[in-house]
Image (cartoon, rainbow, N blue to C red; front, top):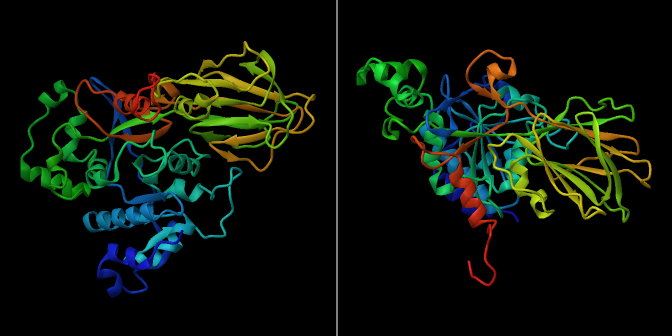
Amino acid sequence: MKVPRRKLYSLVGRRLFSSTLRRREIKHLLELPDRIHPSYHETRGNDLLSLRWPSPPRNILLVKKENTSETTEAVLEFAQHVHATYPSISFILEPAPAYDLQTLLPFPLYTTPQETTTTPNGVCLSSFLTQKVDLIATFGGDGTILHASSLFATTPSVPPMLSFSMGTLGFLNEWKFPEHKRAFRELYMSGSPSARHSILSPEEAASSPPVSQNATHIIQSKEGWPPNLGASLGPTRAARVLLRNRLRVAVTSPGREVITPPALHALNEVILHRGASPHLTHLTISISGRILTSTSADGLIISTPTGSTAYSLSAGGSIVHPLVKGLVITPICARSLSFRPLVLPAEAVIEVTVSGRGKQGVGVSIDGVDQEKGVGSGMGLRVWGESVGRKWELGKKGEDWMGGVPCVMRGNSGEGASGDEGWVGGLNGLLKFNYPFGEEG
């Protein structure tokens, strides 16, 4: 459905009509400064991590649900607010929405050329985005988050993601759009001098020398944050982040060699399925080099803890907390009553080989996107968990964390808080966990 332009014009005010064509042009995102990488740190009494920017973020990627006037209006309102309050920030969009919105905003938008080649999972080439995007804001449902994550499917480092629930299902979305000013301010100011002491432990904070108000202004001006912008956030309002584990998947040859480098990352799951064929798939499953079983089924799901509440749950799989590092194997209509879902450690390497008994290849879907080429007889998939943890645990230097998809969470961020509030609320409110029969919601 096409959005009435008169309605959209009202969102941008008079500035639209006084703006020059130059200010509304589309530019290549390679003109933007390089990406700023935040760090993630543990805090006392909190399961979530604190985000710390070394300097203010400058480039934000906006990802919206397609063909909805509500998300279009939200993106325009959000972009105008951010541009007015944080004028140093530039906006990146995918080619199609960038060309749709360029005349509705009084400042340039950045994107990649529309003729840019695509990755094997059918999304725009992500190399430019990896170099330039500081943070991501999504406007839609869980599918919009999965799409935004897929734009970084070939890279181990994903920018922090701020998600507004405006879709059919919002189990992964933390924020309501009316909270967008507060949410973005918390994310933008996280790590600034006015919020940085919230990352320190009480002992470190007590031993830190006091800083006068004027001195703080000097530090903020030197490092680039607007003076007093984060003063009202209080001492414990650094942005809290949940690192959602991804899985990695690669296609293997009959000789078990990887034939599709680089391996792709998936936030939810990878699925082997029979597609349009009426025949069952015949699969052999190995775990860390040892054969587990062979099965005849409609398909097989290998999901992350985040994906355990998606297709895997519908197929009878276990619900796994997002802070658990693991993988879930769930059969789809197996020809057996004893093939139950399995929860494995994230370090396990799962290999699924297509048996020669099948009459044709098996389809492959990654985070809901069917791959152009399936997996033929004798070929297979190799799936393993992404490394998420402290850098020194992963062979790198540093105490901060790395890996996963950093999702900005809402709720209480003080001592004793945890990442359970949104997850438990989603189980009860959206999934109706242990919901009694015959009672109204």
